[in-house]
Length: 234
Ligand SMILES: [Zn+2]
Image (cartoon, rainbow, N blue to C red; front, side):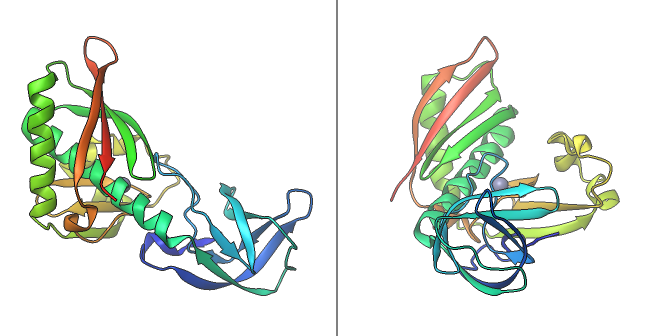
């Protein structure tokens, strides 16, 4: 199993690791630990460098996290240095956190549930069961999002035993019960006083780091399902 360092320290930009497997055909290596986020939950995988080579893709396969390299592969047992494209990753952390603020506000004030979402660097979309969403509400939501940024709410990451997580009403609402049975621990992200979710992604430590949030558009995806698009300021 590759230890995912980003789960406990999202601000880790450089790290050292040991190569535990190589795939010559794919030109990829698996490490004992990594700061690279392999993608998931709507957040893309990180870019960066490993053993001096550009990392072109990162994916979780089985228990390992594989790093595809554009260049010469190190050998099993080698110690290698990794470095994230931090500018890009930090923008993804800000973007990801903006969507938690959106989830929190839309649930707190309109009781609308999230059904899905996807994000890129400083932009993304999220879908809700939100029948009464219309233009006036969009303007109101944008104001509320920026109020939550200005409120400078701290964000906490916790890893809880499954049984404990299953007793938390906010987590039950976000369909935590769909987690496979083998998973014994649940990682939670809490925006103090606003939002609590089970989540594997990377987030900033305080809502003020997100910066300005703009509702770039909204779309009807049916009678009930509505999509909200966000853009985050540079
Ligand atoms: Zn998240």
